[in-house]
Image (cartoon, rainbow, N blue to C red; front, side, top):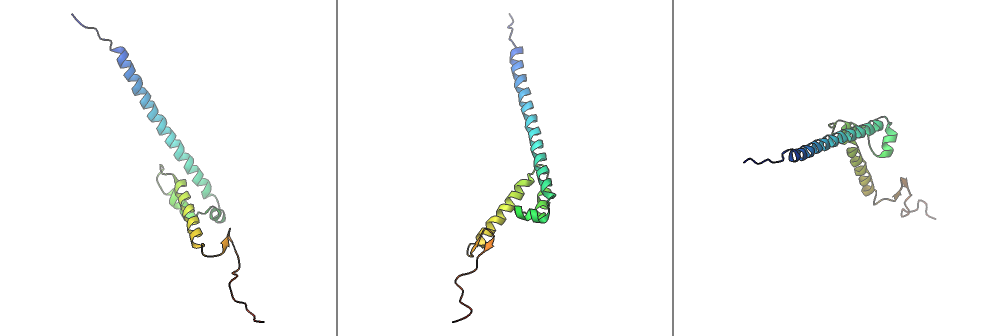
Length: 117
């Protein structure tokens, strides 16, 4: 007596799961490529700005060169964001003892008078 086992429904389910996982892998890979291209385009737009506009953002031309010299998969905008935040934090901590608000400096009020009456 021989036993007849249903192989096709089991194999079909396994094949469907394999196909779904391969498809998910390729879609994730394509999304990563699209994301990397988008970040590169954004960094190239920043490279077209002049020095004064970059200074307003808080980055320099050398920051752009450093960011764009990385590999294709690295996000250049992340490095630019970090550099701009570092500069803002450094500027805020270095000016903490002075009377500077929003880029304008106030004259000191504790200085002695120039002329005595």
